[in-house]
Length: 111
Length: 120
Image 1: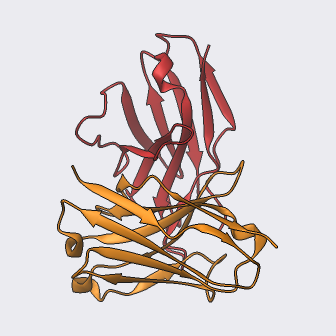
Image 2 (image 1 turned 120 degrees about the vertical axis):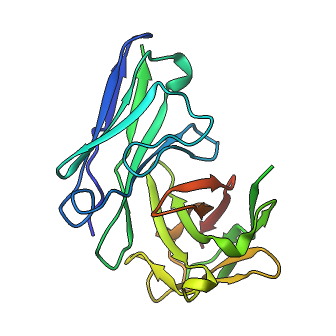
């Protein structure tokens, strides 16, 4: 089972919006609405930002939103802030024996 | 505060074994599947495996990279999940995290991680 494909890096200025893509297959993203996104600051525990494609856990800013089209999921961060600078990973349930597959990770830089 | 704390990491020689523990607090441990992840130095997050809640059979699943060498178990009476790692390889060097699986792969609670270094 290959990892989901994400861009290595995305950058934006404070206040701007950015979108991170996550491309999989019909066996994972395209087949199920179990896509989630995680924010990971170095030396900290990863944090769930989006689950079930577009739902935000309690306490997560509404500047974060998720969507899906076909085999590609997306995370959009609007009103970019310095604290958003981190690595972001997507994840999906998969029908393969692996059960869950993660993305390659995207480094978000706030310019 | 809902919390997960990993322990048991350290330095181990290739070919040997190590067991990690994940102790949960302030939630009903038996109501959730539990997963293990790892992050090798300079690499991304990798799902290692998970164990279902007992009401779903309590059975584990594993990533292909660790299948046959790693095993996951749980003790709901103690609110602990375990990751038994056998025949360790240098490429297993990573920070290992345990997580709570709230639904369909939404890993909503993460521990701080424990470092495992496999080196001679």
